[in-house]
Image (cartoon, rainbow, N blue to C red; front, top):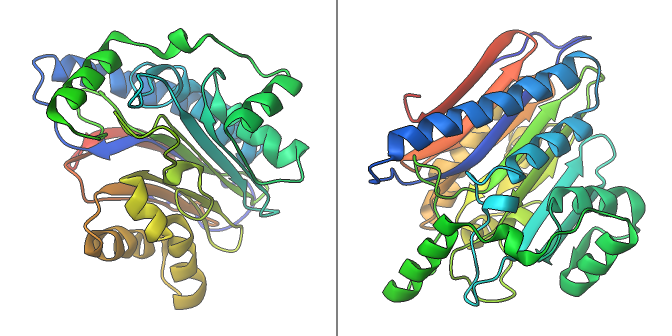
Length: 316
């Protein structure tokens, strides 16, 4: 998907809600319709901001907040639960203009983890803050807090019970929207790129486990020299592959375009490690790329030159 030739006024936004297997639930199609509507609403809000000259960093943060607030996705309200039946939320955000970044992990009482990641980026000398320190940082900055029971949806409790019964640690978005890390990438009219990612991690994960969503260069990366990237999938694999940064590196050092770089990362590097998942990316010319090797990827995009597009399956 291409926004236009490089020049003043170009903007683009892409979002994802995870990549994984097709659901076999009887209500899959009904939930798929809910997902499409949720993604479309996020794109509409982002288009309004970016077309009015808003910053890419604000656009990706706000897009992820909307996705965190939806119980359809594995982030914020819809987050999966760890082995103790508790939420442990991760998020990160990066500014392509300055290469500043903010990341948090192990949050339990913050309604919107991406808000805290943005505050780390702008209001801290650090990049990554974890656990109790991240909770304290959020409290000092007046971020909205909630009781951990806010995150306990019936669906996630049921999934945890099933995972415990089967002895599994699992995530994996499905066409019914049962889970899925969320993310957003954007180019604004000023030529700046940004990326943001948020997740609840894995169902039945070990307490303290950290996936790629909170790791700059693995799940999230942005540089005005190349592109902005947000990943979703098996976090351990994406960390080992330094996935998000690798897309940018393939563009910067190998001269690949964003679509080719994204596809190479997913279908060669991640696949070679036995990983499954996907990514979204946008380059400095407003060209949007989706790449995934799973059955489905919840995704959407809108640019200054193209109407909003949302899809779940490979063929939409």
